[in-house]
Length: 281
Image 1 (cartoon, helix red, strand yellow):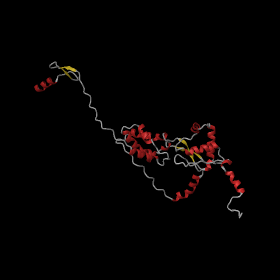
Image 2: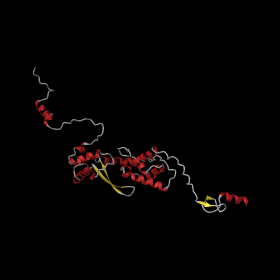
Image 3: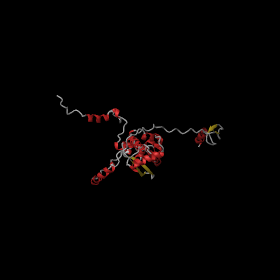
Image 4: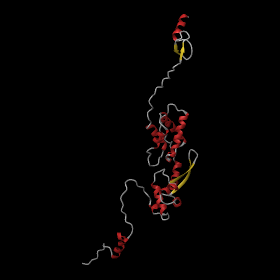
C-alpha cells in the first residue's frame, strides 16, 4: 500500500526548483505586447558582453530613430546628460563592434559629407552582398523605370528654370532624404517652374514638396516629388486685362485764328479754325 509514485518530484528536485521562486531574487517580467511605437532590438546588442551600458543605450536609441535623424556627438549630448567625451567614446564602441558605420560621400554639388549608417545586425549586409555577388553577375539588370511626367511651364524662361533648379537643390537642407541627382533635378525643374509661373512663391512650393513626408526611407524621392508636382498643381491665376493707358491732358493754348482757348500740346489753331482753312483750300 506504500508504493512510491514515480512521477512525484524528489525532495532534492523540489529544493532546486525553489531557487526560481519569486522571493529567491532575480528579475520578474511584467510584459505587455506592444502594438504601436516600438522597435525590435536584438539581444546581441541589448546583452552584448563587451559594450558599456552607455554604448548599449545609445545603440538602442539610434536604432529607434527615423531615417535622416541627426546622431552626431553634439546632438546626442544635448539629448542625454552624458557629456560629449563619454558619448564620443560610446559611439566608437558601437563602431568597433559593427553597429555603426561612417562613410564619406560626395554630393552632386561637390561637397564631401559624412553619413552615419546604423546596423541592427553587424556583418549581415556584408554576408548578403558576398552571397548575392555571383547572382548579380549572371543576371542582366532591366532598364530603370522612368520618372513620372511633370507639368511644363508655358514660357520656360532660363531665369525661371534656374530658380526652380536652385529650389530643388536646396531641398536636401530641409530633409537629407531629398538629395537629388543632376538627372532627377533636370527632370523636375520644369514642374517647379510651372508652379512658379502660376504666382506660387518658392516658399510655398518648398513647403508642398517637404510637408508630411513618410517616416520610412524614401526609395526614390524624385518619383514622390514628381507625383506631388502633378497631383497638387494649382490652377492658373485669373486673367487680368491690361489697364488702359492714362488720359493725357494737354495745357491750354490760345488759338492763332480766333484767340479762343483750347487744349493742345503746343501753340496753333483750334479745331474750328483748322476746318475753316481746309474748306477754304
